[in-house]
Every structure is written in structure tokens, then in C-alpha cells.
Length: 104
Image 1 (cartoon, rainbow, N blue to C red):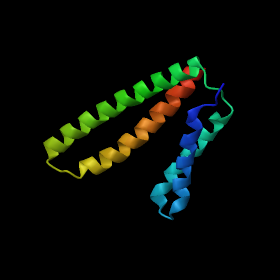
Image 2: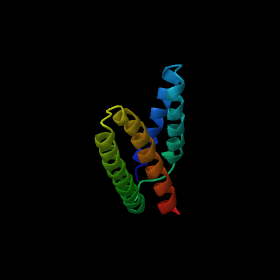
Image 3: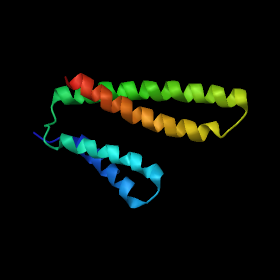
């Protein structure tokens, strides 16, 4: 059997080392995906990844719609920049926590 493809998400953690900007330190959290190097890729893991990705997609669509409504009501387009940041963080956290939950 092959190992899981999730381990390659760990390489995104090196983006935190690229620059000295404090905003990039959040990428260090991706190093946690290196823990999937020894997990074999089987049908159960694929199902759990699909369920977790579905949860992250639902969260992203919900947050995006809320950001669109807020930006439309406030007529301030700087909301999109903050919504993009929040959306990225929530997608990764939702995927990670859902995968840990479904893996139990």
C-alpha cells in the first residue's frame, strides 16, 4: 500500500521560514501534517478525507456568503481581505479537526 498524500501538506510549513514577517508564522501549523507519513492510504482514510473536505467546503461557502453580505451592506471592499484570511484559517482548521474526529 502507498502512504498518504496528506504528508505533502507539511511542506507548506516552510513558508513560515521564508520571510521574517510575523504574519507567516501561522504556516508552522502545517508541519503537523508530517505526522501522516507513516499512515497507509486505505479506503477508510480516503472516506475520512472526503468527509473532512466536505466540511471545509461547507464552512468556506458559509463564510464567503456572510462576507459578501457584510461587504454589500457596508459598501466597504476591504472586508474581502479580512474575509480571505479568516476563510483560509477556518478551512484548514475545519479540515484538520474533522479529520482527527473522523479518524477516531
